[in-house]
Length: 180
Image 1 (cartoon, rainbow, N blue to C red):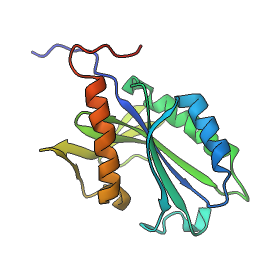
Image 2 (spheres, rainbow, N blue to C red; image 1 turned 180 degrees about the vertical axis):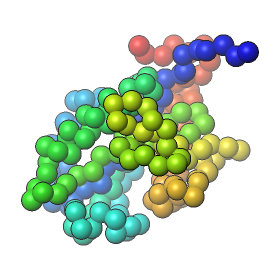
Image 3 (spheres, rainbow, N blue to C red; image 1 turned 30 degrees about the horizontal axis):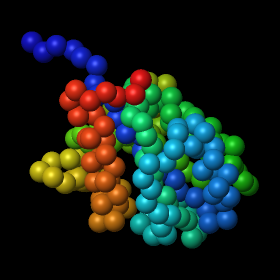
Image 4 (cartoon, rainbow, N blue to C red; image 1 turned 135 degrees about the horizontal axis):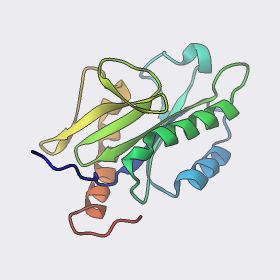
């Protein structure tokens, strides 16, 4: 019989898809006021991986990925998703989003994203939010699934993720103090 225990804290991750004309500095100030300093970032890069958001958000979209310090409790993911949904709503224009925020976390063995959409590979967390293991870490690398978004498979994103994971592993190594 196993013994239930509290899991290690995780590194907060955020992917930001946005229209080119959005005022990035204001958005970044709002995000860092909520989640703390950006530790690592990748981008913004042109989002050419899918046309899924074109009808709602237009063309020429950019995507920016970031992580924050210090580690957080993974149980906060539904709350964080609710907050990012609020930020999206506050920036609606002509009935559509100008920004799409996808929070998640990096743990030693996976990248998890929060979503409001249920599907066979997603588990219900709470507050109408589901968690999706988007990538898993095995044999020294992040590996994808059939449902992993194309941009998360890119080499440059993987390099960013490996740096963030290395810092996380250092911060949460056994016996090391972690912030409350």
